[in-house]
Length: 286
Image 1 (cartoon, rainbow, N blue to C red):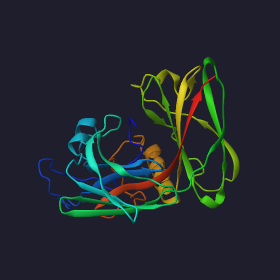
Image 2 (tube, rainbow, N blue to C red):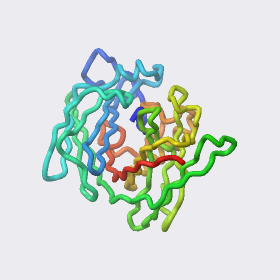
Image 3 (tube, rainbow, N blue to C red):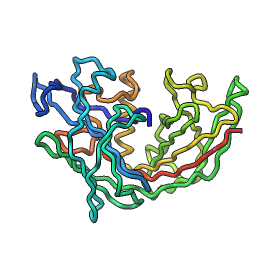
C-alpha cells in the first residue's frame, strides 16, 4: 500500500539519529519504538518500525525516514512455528522499509505473537485473525453531477456473534496501489444482517486518480480487498480516526498526542500488531 493506514505515538520525544541506543527520558519525555505490524489470512506478516518523532521537530518525509529502524530482529510465531522476518525496502509503503515474512502465512482463527528486539529492548504483542466475511454483491450508480464517474456499493451480511468490523481497500490501474476507504464499518459492533456501504477511497493530490475523488471511472477494472478485524484492532483504528479528524492532520504517522491510543504493543513500544481476514475481488465498473 502507498501509505500506512495508521500509527500515532502516545507521546513523541527527542532522539539522536546518530546513536542506536534508546534514551527513554530526555527533557521529561519518553522515547518509544513505533510498531505497525499485520498478518492477513493467506499472506505473510509485514512489520514497519520507527523511533518516534519529537513534537518540536517537523513531521515530513525526510525526518520520518531518519527515524526508521532497519536493524531490529523481528519474529512471528503461531505457537507451533516461529519465523524470523527478513528486512528490505518496500516502495509501495511509507516509510518504505519493511520486515517481511516468507514462510508463515496467516490462517483464520489462529493466534499470532510478534517479538521485536532492538537496542537491548524486547517488545511483544499478540493478535488473532478473525473469521472473514464474503461480499454478497457489488453494484454501481452514476456519480452526482458527473456521468463519466461511478459510485460503487458493496453489500454483505454481518454476523453479530463474530464481533468483527471491516475495512475496504481499492486499487485502480492508473494509481497502481491500494487506497483505503477511510471508514470502519460496524466499529460499534451493533449491526447485523445484510448491510450496504459505499466504497469511497480518498486519493491524495499527487495520485493520478485525484480528479475522481471518491468515485471510479466507467470501464475501469478495480481490485478490492475486503478485510475483517477483531475488536482490539477496531478500537485502535477507531481511536486513531477520531484523533486524526480532531487534530486536522489526517492519518499521518508518528504524530504527537497527549492521550495514548489503544496500543497492544508492550512498553517501551507503541502501535498495533493486528490480524485480519481478507477477501479479494475484481470489479469492472459499468
